[in-house]
Image 1 (spheres, rainbow, N blue to C red):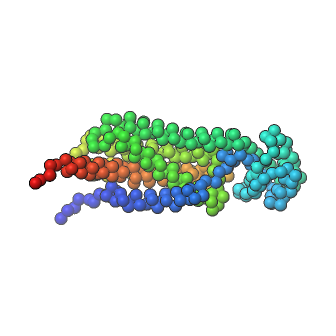
Image 2 (image 1 turned 90 degrees about the vertical axis):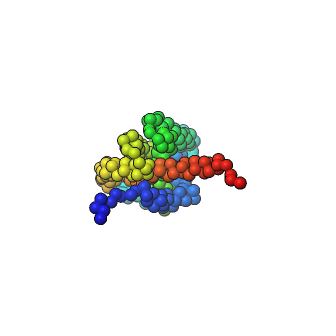
Image 3 (image 1 turned 30 degrees about the horizontal axis):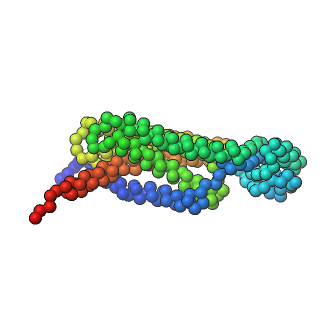
Amino acid sequence: MNNQPRTLNIIGKRRFWYAISLIMIVPGLISLLTFGLKLGIDFNSGQLSVVRGNVTANRVDGAARGLGFQDIKVVPSGSNETQIRFRDPAPQAAHEANHQKFKTALVARNITELSFDSVGPTVSSAIARNAIVSLVLVSLAIVLYVAWAFRNTPPPVSPWGFGIMAIAALLHDALFVLGVFSLLGHFFGVEIDALFVTAILTVIGFSVHDTIVVFDRIRENLRRERGDFETIVNHSILETIGRSINTSLTVLLTLLALFLFGGQSIRMFVLALLIGIASGTYSSIFNASPLLVTLHNWRLRRMEKERVGLKPKKG
């Protein structure tokens, strides 16, 4: 009778983990392709006024009468605060004068302005361009750094394999967060701003950090152990899974407190971090390392086909 304890076979169930990832990503990806992201004034030129008081759409329309404002939206944001979003088609030089007239008209209606932001089309396009460039550069830098850091890894994994799988996990997390916010934007009007880009970059950094912890243990076990690559990877995951989950839980609990009790202005930023870090913990354990095994097995099958193809035919 075999009394040896059974080991959790995470790698053996990798197709199941891949399926969960697809379920996580596909709805959001469809939303991204169909609806896109609801962009805030950081990416679309416009004005945002945060006010407090008895705010109604009719009162705001009355205060804006004669100023030529377009696309006026009144959005309650909690804590007795309301966001008023609009576009001022007047020349840039006239924006501040129009703002002061609007502010005075709001005060006459017992509405107090708490903050005001205005972003022109040149600034908004520059922010969007810089956000895309920063994400691309960060991804390339991560591939190069991971490949360099794991340059002395024993066979059968190449350093580039580690880098590519780190990017795969990174893309999983970024796409999941983008997809969720695309759905939130379409159904609940949630807009993204420059803070959202900061959240995505933070998620990417956390995801790569968590993934490298597992990869480093795989490298160490490849040096110490002899045996099947799949078994070594599974053993490495089990050795680090507790650390990964505990580290993530401490961060997630802190972010949850910020989300529940923090200010309205950072709530969506914190939500993006919550979603992304939870996804990053999942992908570092159940995607990045299993993908190393999938890549390794694919290479073995390809080498076997090439070897069989080189055999001389009989007869």
